[in-house]
Image 1 (cartoon, rainbow, N blue to C red):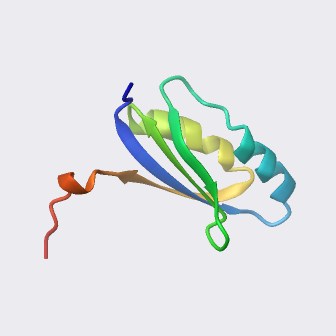
Image 2: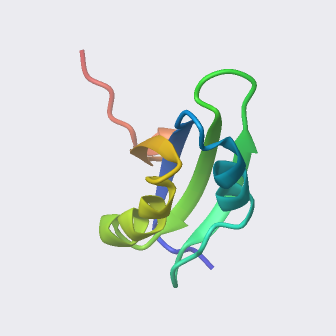
Length: 88
């Protein structure tokens, strides 16, 4: 079942928050209509990325906000490469 929009969130753990970030990343709260495709820890910066699907930006924000107390986050809307119209 597709939820709509795909998002990629990059997470950089805040100093002193490693243990809490690990717990939060391993057991995130999922709002209705959010489906996580991948939640990956990285060797380097950022520390983790989560690729997820949500019906709209407001629902995506509702999901991502939980990481704000343990990590700095940057979230981007992701589009299938076929849908990108590159310009020069």
